[in-house]
Image 1 (cartoon, helix red, strand yellow):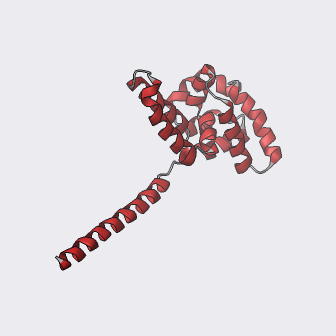
Image 2: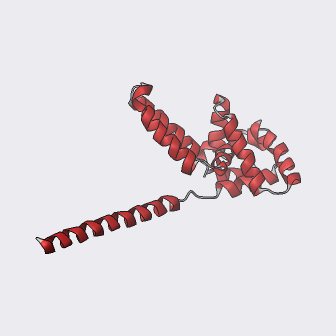
Image 3: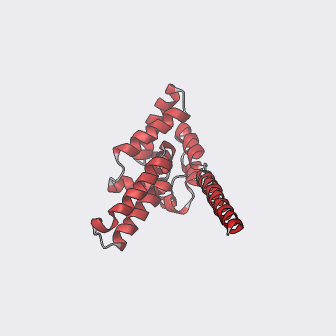
Length: 179
């Protein structure tokens, strides 16, 4: 779950590079990608996954590439999945430890493991001193992305295509009867 934001960024960077950085040449492509992103892919859950993925978070936090929208979406996800405000407050304090790489998060082994372990395994091994945030992170990062929305779209498109084919065949047969 924690890779979609990064994948979209890498995709757009690759497209821009392929067009030599000439924005005029790829702006229409970006509009299509951005529309699909905002209409179907962009969800607060993905932002939470991005922030809680240690391999991505610490790399992007150091580069200061996490914008306010990502944090707003993280908070929206947190409010939806954790209804207890007292638990959310506790998790906010624990998030501060994660953000600052305090405690176990700052140990050499935890730093090296950010990119070697799966995000879930990393939280299981190094998140014990922030139990509420650890549980939330494992819950979010254990979710898998689904292509069911795409499958539904293709199913609809296939049905429409079949109807067109049947309509065309009907007209061909009808015309052949009269000529």
